[in-house]
Image (tube, rainbow, N blue to C red):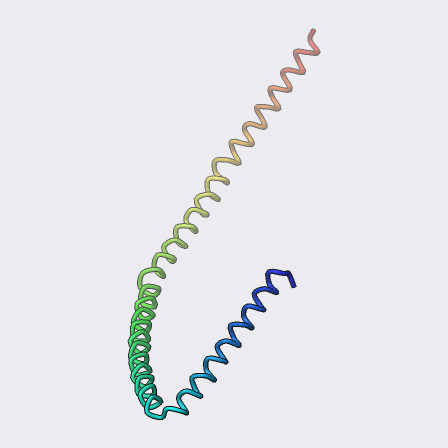
Length: 128
């Protein structure tokens, strides 16, 4: 464990101990003052209700966004991918056709021309 990690662990333990001490002090204070405890309890219940409303609203928004994403994937991106796949297959077929019907004959012709050129070059050397 590096010294920096050790510092973070020690800092985390200190913060945890402070939180525990704060909770113990709050519980002691609330036990000593029941009227204050009831006020804090009511405030906490209201806070939890408002938080539940926000969480519910957030979940509804999340579900709507998820439905929109699913719709986008099914109706827009899937056709684009299919079209792209068709295009790639067409390009592949075109490349094979060009290779078989243009490149191969040109390469053969070039090799024949090179062979003839070399042949005539050798014939000129022997004539000298």
